[in-house]
Length: 286
Image (cartoon, rainbow, N blue to C red; front, side, top):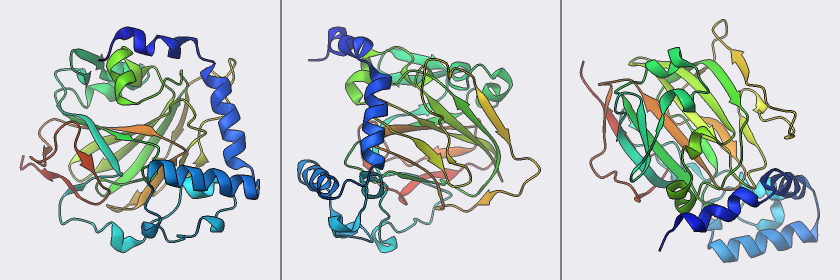
């Protein structure tokens, strides 16, 4: 049974140091050691390598290459829906944003403003809107795709801590997604703005986007500044299903949409396993 004590050790762990160490190994071309680690990982998590474009584990020079492996397109067909699931993983929570309150777990909420790093103007665009929080476990495919067509307007890097984002920790750590390191990607679409928030976690070596590369700088106590990039003058447009970013190891994506823009798939409930490309939601007629 879950208790608050079960997450207490995470407050004491040297999360930054552990993540830096894991990142160095994941980037290293360590030959047989890399292949050994991949083999153990595949067996432990029962990874279906038959879905990968490169099914042979010897085809990956680094653990990073394996972890961000591409899948065969036919393994993830794109649904005929206005909004599709952007990842492989599980639904943590979803539903309506109550004023500015997002459900993190049963009995535990956090504020849109906190998630947006204090940007009140951006947060207000999603008051009383809809949200979906999707968890990617270590075994999952770790590329993130567009849920709908969109034009990128801003990207914001917010430094933070690196708590695990597994279900137990999400239930136990207040405001976890607004405390962890994260990258906020702001898009405009035919139905208005939406954001994809890529949340870092313990052992997550990096967060990268297709237009920027690795976003999070070398982690240290001195790297505490919010960084922002504006793309208003650029035509960075993406179609539904296009890759937009990727993680190393397990993490979380939080999506926010304005009020009365979509209606979630009725089969989507917390805890449900989901796959990239399946129907997430339909557009609501205004």
